Image (cartoon, rainbow over all chains, first blue to last red; front, side, top):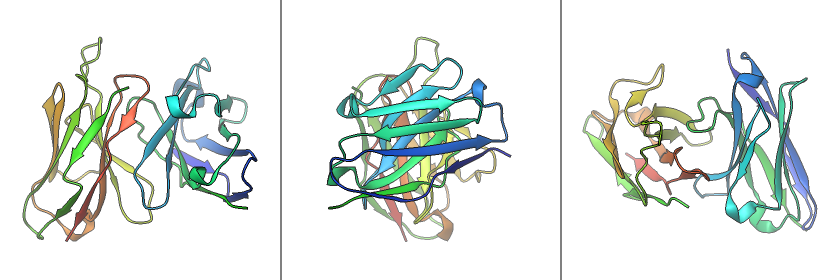
Length: 116
Length: 111
């Protein structure tokens, strides 16, 4: 069965960076893509970015462009999402999901807390 | 960028009664390939989102048939024919046609 398992919760200081991983199993990683979505406390879902695991093509939300990078390691079927120059506004649960136009399987979420 | 607008923000429902959520996009969601990439997600409290509907009206495997999606162009609807207690949570539409992709603001369904 398809599973996406994310790395554990992180606490970071303002100005730092965080890198969240998402390890896929149960399907051929390179035949699909990974979407990243975040959810601030008590708020809705925010689309962050997308990467094709086939050819590495990416697309990012305009407001995060330049501060977020998504990558993949096809040898380990793992996707990564790095956010730099963190502020308190980046405190959220970060999700990875399989697919782009209609993500079907989702990870369990990773809580990133930004606090001094 | 495409803006997705959902209504209502909050939807009080009665068990066994129907419920309906609206989603409007700022541009047509018909893709150049002829498909309309409009999805609906359910998020129960404390859980990850779950896709219910893709390409406007296709139900995902395991999704009860009381959930249905309809619409075209810029105007879409998610309907629950008879609300059950397990349907409580937030519902989001998401467009997958125009990059960058985007979600609606969400609708909280409460008994």
